[in-house]
Amino acid sequence: MIKLTKLNGEEFYVNPHQIEFIEKVPETILRMLSGKTIYVRETVEEVIDKIIEYRKKITYFKDVF
Image 1 (cartoon, rainbow, N blue to C red):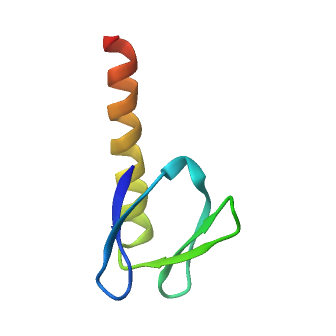
Image 2 (spheres, rainbow, N blue to C red):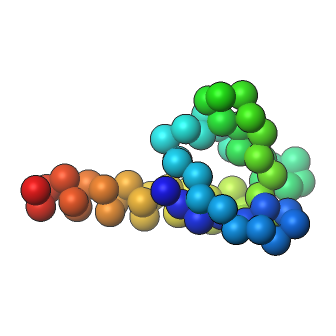
């Protein structure tokens, strides 16, 4: 899970495998596989960086066990 911030300042966690695509208009919008739309404070680049870090972590754990 990655930690993100809603526009109202509330922090939440989202499963990055459930993100279908990310838009910037001008806010960052996550479109989920479920059809849900989530607006976040982070930039598109920050969200992508968080996804990359998350995937590095789970790949590391896969190799450990």
